Image 1 (cartoon, one colour):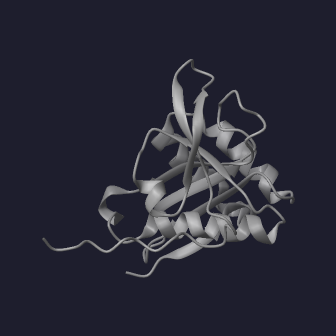
Image 2 (cartoon, rainbow, N blue to C red):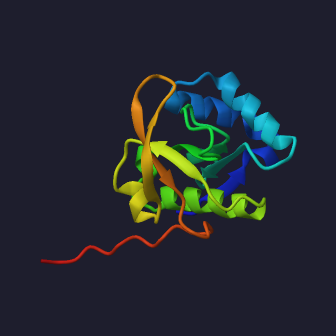
Length: 164
């Protein structure tokens, strides 16, 4: 299947749809996403929002880059956030493609290092991200912080499974 990458800031006509999609995945009000996407459309580096659309034009996955993803370490910025791939599109490398898109775009904007908070282990390490530390989140929980691969432009290739 062919997927088309889209920066919402370059497609303001899609902001409402993309904001509703992200809100439905993460439980954050649509207005928060649409405000951030409109800020991206006004120009600048951060925030930025990315979606992949399937052949029918539906959003198959997305992610964003924001200054801070609701954690206490304001010095660990900017943050990759809200990475989600629809279940029917998983297993096709779309998460890796989205993360690589965000890294390349940020590097083109003069930002060579990103951070992210997550409780997932394994996914980001396979893409070359490194665990940095634990951080207290705004809701009081503790999450893991990762830093993007050195150079940032691509995610590391997936490790090939071995046969026993």
